[in-house]
Length: 541
Ligand code: AMP
Ligand code: MG
Image (tube, protein in one colour):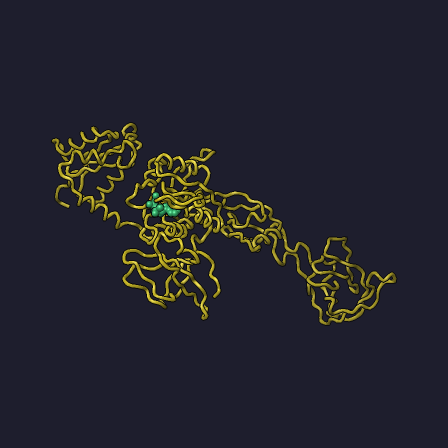
């Protein structure tokens, strides 16, 4: 651009940065914004002042009216609700002419960058901490854990040559002809015993799973034999006739390591140990007593709001009181998905209380879920508390979706007992019960999966056919609570659970899926196919 750049000034309002300018990170961020408008702006002034009204105003007037006046002043800091946050008032007092239209333009362009669900999920993946690795004993307590290492078979299975059937161990002659009567020279049971080599022309009684006598090359099943005589005392078989023809070497034998070879990889890093037994069985069979797993995160659940009372408080509700629905439903959902949930109670809408509750909670858990206190228009306490009091970072503060628009995702720095600096996620979900449960499944669960090493993250999704018309929202993509069932033709069909108002927790009763409906006019017609996020198993119809 050929014209002279406009002159800009940056005023940082922060008591901390005024004492220690290195604590300020906003100047460079703002400079980058100006620089990105190539040649349009020149940042000619910067200053840091403490949260003191007179100092803010002195700087503003000197840059506006003084000999070195500029075209635009940008202030940063001091805009929250904490005591001492006075920038908006200080600015308003020196303004000759307020320009609400500019504020409106700023707000609406910021609303336009409200992330979509997919962008929000990308931010969650980027900012959720990776899992810790722990050593866990192999036992039923391992169920639900994700392996943090490939597991190698320590031993062969079977560890010895074993019979697959009840019958007689034999040494097959070279022509394979075993027909004839043979003396029974030994008995081999499934329990370990002494070894006696078997010779051609002799046979040994053997039970299923028992080790083969040394020298035996095959086992004839008892059905292909006839007992000829017993010993004099009548306790043992003496002679047995074999009827089988064409016997091959190795018949009815499980060779050493034929099920699992020593040294083979039996389970892979990232696999989850299921409760139906397959993975535990493998580990047990090959003698693996301990494995490395990702530590299962512990989740704290906190309700917020002056109007919220315990769900089981006896007596009638006073005007305005609301029974705490979210804490019990979210704790149960957390547990249903295999994670430990801790009850952090109800925090009142006071900055100090909320801060203390969050601090205490962060010491005990790996992630906090809060509900309430994020909707627009109310005293929006959570975001300022997370950012200012806890020094956290808000990665998104709303999402372009219905329900659940005010969903907030943040991480806060925490020092562990060993002095290590880590971050822990906080999800601040909307207060309306249906919104809280929908956003739990959409956002919190994927984060829990990243935190526990589970993949794929989040609930599974399947295509389903609509069994009736579904209304669409004009402005936002909607997650419609629905019940999916298997139709007579084997296809999955979806019906709505009814009224979708975000306060209607009943819309989640019997729901096993959230239908991903695009925004649009009118309705999506019966017979159309949409993706469904499965939050519970599908029942056969
Ligand atoms: P808020 O975001 O705090 O304004 O909450 C939005 C709505 O959800 C209000 O009607 C609250 O009363 C309601 N709400 C908030 N928390 C809960 C809760 N734990 N259980 C039931 N309703 C709640
Ligand atoms: Mg509230």
